[in-house]
Length: 225
Image (cartoon, rainbow, N blue to C red; front, side, top):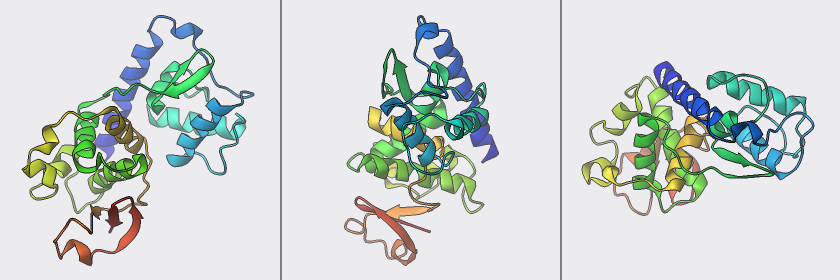
């Protein structure tokens, strides 16, 4: 798990450097203490999802939000100044442009991110966005578990683990939604609360998987431990 986190942090640091050197980066909008509005709310929502911030997303950039941003920056190898500029926004998967913030264009930041995005697309492209993040989170939870391989590729390609590997769907090109969902999971959002398994009860005849304890249901998938 430590190797996974270090790899993700390095990839985000490289991405941040590229953003900081991009033309016009110095003129880009920066969110900091005193900022307010929908842009701040979206950043807070992500920080809450990833576990860096507690409470409600109120759209007011205070010391609590600054500290949460700084914690995110430290974990991802960024300058921990507590401000959301182009580099931090890119690592969060959002784009700051002039006076507004939009969803970031889908960008692959590492080989692990690419493979996880392909898994999400193959296994959950018909699910809600939260459901796609949840599928990615299950993979990462397995990486962190002593009962599974300790790399993303090891988990995904473990014999019999995912039907998309055996039927070849893992080789399809992921769409932007799957790419963003995988990045959200890599950044720490786990809608499943630590689940190690998921299945569609309407589509599987596997009796063993039904013996697992279901913790939550998101879309068509039951998530279990």
